[in-house]
Image (cartoon, rainbow, N blue to C red; front, side):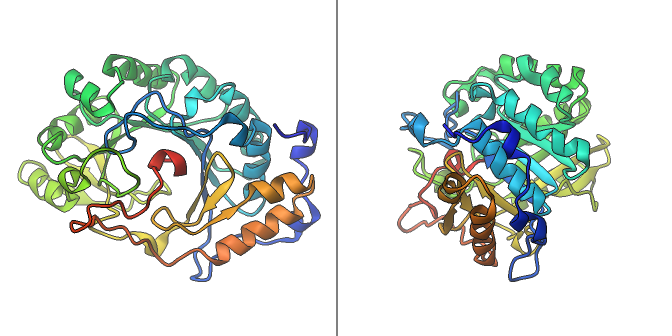
Length: 350
C-alpha cells in the first residue's frame, strides 16, 4: 500500500504544471487512458483467459490511492477520457472510492469522461453509485443471449445477472453500449438478433474481432471471425450507412436503417486502426503499455513510489510516449498457432 496521503495526491508537481500535452513522435496526441484496476475476474471467457488462471499477488497491485495519483498525472498532461477496466473492475474491493475521487477532475473540467468496461456481473449493485460519480456511459460485454452458450463462453457467468445489471444501469441513467466478440461457429449466426435486441433496448452494439493475446486453452485460428464477413452478411438483411460518430475508441460505426441504432466494428485484424490511435494502457501494477499489440512497456510504479512529487513519474511517462509505436503487430499465426503477444487481455486491461 502507498503511504502517500490522499490530500497530497491532487497537487500537481512543478514538472507536471510546466509540461505540455502528451504527443508521440507521429504527432498523435494521447488523450485517452485505459487503466486496469485488477487482473482478477469472476468470468473465464474462452477468448480472454485460461480456465485456471494464476493471478497477481495483491501486494504487487497499485493501491487505490496510487491509481488515483497515476491517473491524475495523466489528466494533468491532457488526458480527457479515462476508462477503468480489469479483469473485471467492479470485483476490486472499494473500487467506488477510486471512482468518487477521480470524479473531481470532471468537476474541474479537466476530464471530459470517466467510464468503465464491465462484464456486468456486479453492475446491479454499483450502477446508481457510478451515476452519482458522474459516469455517463459504460460498456458491457455480452457475447450471446443464449443462456447455455453464455455459460460456455464465460465458463462461470450467469446471463440473467448480467441482464439485471444492464437494466439497473439504464434505470440509473447510464448509457449502455454492448460489446460482443465475434466468434466463429459460436455466436456468428446470432449477431443479427443480438443487434436487434440491443437497438430495441436503446443500446449501441460494437462487434470485436478476436485478438491474439495470451494462451487461453483455445485455438484462436478456430475462434477468429473477420468482421468484414460479418458486415457482408448483415448487409444482405439490413441497410448499413457509415457515419462519423466516435466515442474516442477504435470502433467505426454504421447506422442501421431498419433498427435506427448504431453498430460499431472494432477490427484490429482485418483493418489496422493505428493511424489515429490516441490511447495508452496502464496495468494494475503500474506498467504502461503504449500499444496493445506490442510488448514494449514502461514501469511507472517505481517512479510513482520513489517520490511524493510527480517529477520522476512525468519523466517516465514522457520517455514512454516517445516510444509509442506507429502500429501493432497483431496476427493469428496459423503455422505456430501461438499468440502474437504472450500476456493475457486481463493483464493489460480491456
